[in-house]
Length: 387
View 1 (tube, rainbow, N blue to C red):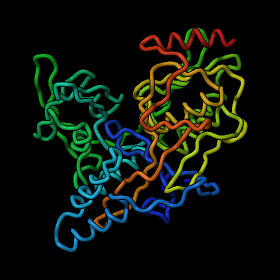
View 2: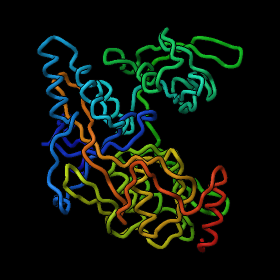
View 3: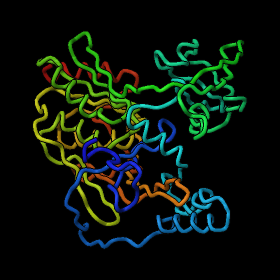
View 4: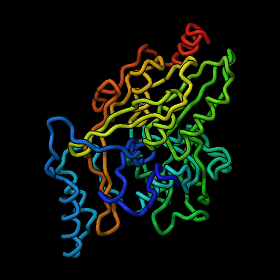
């Protein structure tokens, strides 16, 4: 693992370790974190390091330590302290949950190979089944209802809790352990017993369209995904335009998003961000393809690191952005380890696009609005750009 990757020393957190950005949707993959490339720190003009706010790392660590000394639950005390911050992205994760997040960012996880979402009525529906996974081998399909996990009803539960049940806790999450699913398909209800397995995530997929354009879809910025994007650009036919599909991308490793940006930019600014009043910058590497026609597809599920990449390509005139307004997650979180091994992720700043636009709470407005016809619009635009 190189010096720019996430957690060069995986068990070290806090100020002494590399700062991290949490750029992801908890509903999809949990808190996704990425270390930041080195850079000269400098105070933002007219600012001084901010005083620790309510719900700061110091407050949370103190609350957890006091609870532990009194024989109470440290993680519950930390969660109460975090809730006082009023920030929707601040959270406390158990040691096991955080380990799962790290594994997911490495492109691997232990589970049964299905994704799920909660419908408006609270019911949990399977949305995707990974090919070759235990769930696929058992015949589970997208659209099936998931009613229970190991006898526990899941209707109405947050998706994060359902994912935790599927993967198991610290004592039963290993590959080969058994999990029993209560399923429903139409009028049929049945129970399936599966063995968890070690699975890989395919965060980047590449395909060619009939007109010769290359579609590069990035589902999340996991370890190595940025280099996969660069390789895909190098291997695409010389006359091929590229559609960079970031729809539904919930974020991931910031360094991987910067590497992906480097596939299309010849150096230069990707984003700036502040941490406790200090202004820092992220830069692309030189040598990217700056001539090939490029369209980026986005939607309301495009978040965080994916918004960072989109903003850089749009601000620097490198891509035409098509779709709908992005989610608007542009805050910077830093993790710290608590006395019981749990981890607090607290907001310490925000990032901006190269032109200085703030993303948090605003999102990125596409150059051209499109919904289900977004890919077709992209093909039309590539034709007009001279693909």
